[in-house]
Length: 176
Image 1 (cartoon, rainbow, N blue to C red):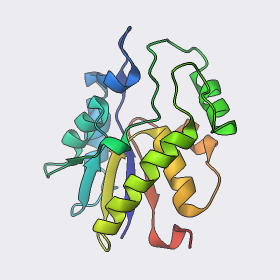
Image 2: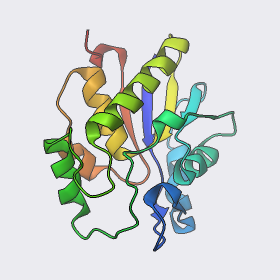
Image 3: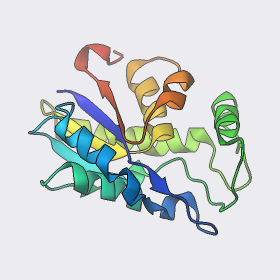
């Protein structure tokens, strides 16, 4: 069993809409199709995704198969339409202080972890022995990898994630 955590393709920010409502940017479809053709994702796997449009759209472009939508795989909730110039800095602050909101309208990262990681574990339990592909979000996947592997969140890897990109967790990486 290998877990493939796919970060969604490039989104199309829309003024006045929260990030959870953003769609995919059609200009980034080629990158998603390139990932599909790259051989980095398994042909035979259980597929699930976040309910956010950019994740659903990415999953639909990556596979012809069924994709289950799991509400708890949504990204670190940011219920503000504010444009944040130093977005990376605010996310880093969120990781430094996970039990508090790093910005007005943002859920604490501890709440995101408490929602996403159990959902991932449930999926892995139900699909034990199978490869699993989850399409979602960089911050949620950074938290998930850290929790599953017993490591600290890798913020440099988070900052380097492309849209789309893949984080792979193999059985030998899982914390006891």
